Amino acid sequence: MALHSIQTDALKSFCDLILCGHEEKVFCRCKECLEHADDDYGGIPRVLYILSGNDTEPDDPSGDIADEDKPLVKQQFYLISSDAGAPDLEDFFWFVENLKTARGLNLAVDKEKFSNDDCIVEWLAELSVQLEDLYIVNFDGASEDYHFTIMSRDDCEKAMDLFKKMTAHVSGYSYTSYLITGSFEG
Image (cartoon, rainbow, N blue to C red; front, side, top):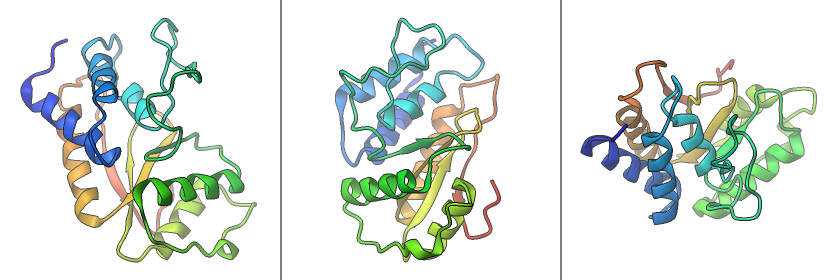
């Protein structure tokens, strides 16, 4: 399905905002996924995984095998995609450190406030409490996975607006995006 100009512009701006600048190959790959989606989800899950560095093999019918040899984006650096049952706490901290570096964020994380007994839901809520003038934004990927990043409030609002425009063409699923707060329960 060909995208109209509003969707194409929204996708381009969304990719640019998530990746802290324009990456033509990434944008083209994401656009291709939206234009050639053959499921009720309109290619949006693939776009989110591409932006998190988990590009999928075009020939894989289930679309879930990462091409580790030629990633378009460094894995888990700008947008984190994580299964609701994963990661372990050390991986979570690694994701956050990568986000800090990639986005040039100045934030301190009090690791003592996190527990191995908890899961990503509690960790995201705790992390949101520790952020000063930064916010966690999550994008619904039509699964139980979390697709999130950390940005300023203005950038989060822009990203959520762009995500809404980008997903407007999808009729088989209703996408959402939201800020994660200390009261987050998953």
